[in-house]
Each structure stands twice: as C-alpha cells, then as structure tokens.
Length: 95
Image 1 (tube, rainbow, N blue to C red):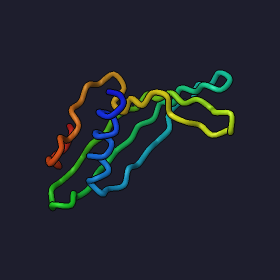
Image 2 (cartoon, rainbow, N blue to C red):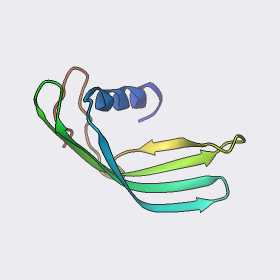
Image 3 (tube, helix red, strand yellow):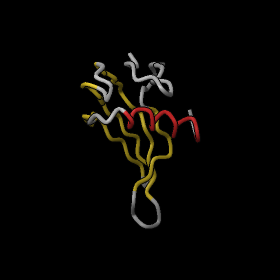
Image 4 (tube, rainbow, N blue to C red):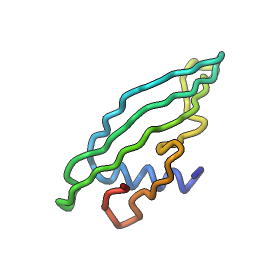
C-alpha cells in the first residue's frame, strides 16, 4: 500500500481517536538508512462505543535527510501478515 491508499488507511486508524502503544524491537542502521521493527497495538473503545483492537509488527524503513531528520521511506504496519484495515465509514477491528 502506497501513496493515497496508505494515507487513507492511516487516516481511518487515526479517526478511531485511540492511543497507539509502540514497542521498538529492533533497529538496523547503515549510514542514513534504518530498518525499524516495532510491535504496535491500538486497543480501546471507539467513538461509537465499539470495542477496537488492532495490532501488528511493523517493518519500516527510514532515511535521514540533509536536515538530519528521519523520514519514513517504507511504512509496512503489518509486516508479513496481510490484514485488512477498517474501511471508510466502518470502525471495526482490523483483526
């Protein structure tokens, strides 16, 4: 998932209005490129009173820019697991 599809999927998760807990597992760096492996969980009650539980083990790649800031190059929130994110207008669990 890239570009507009990725932005829409991230937007649907943010619309849930719930905190995300992230636990960084591994960081592998080479120069200005880094592979991040992190477990994350969104758990709670959504805005319409529904139970929400979404989790994954992300494998992400970031690159350091000339300004020294790190930016995601690849955002893969579910790693090797294929999961369906909540669809627009639906606030059900992705698992």
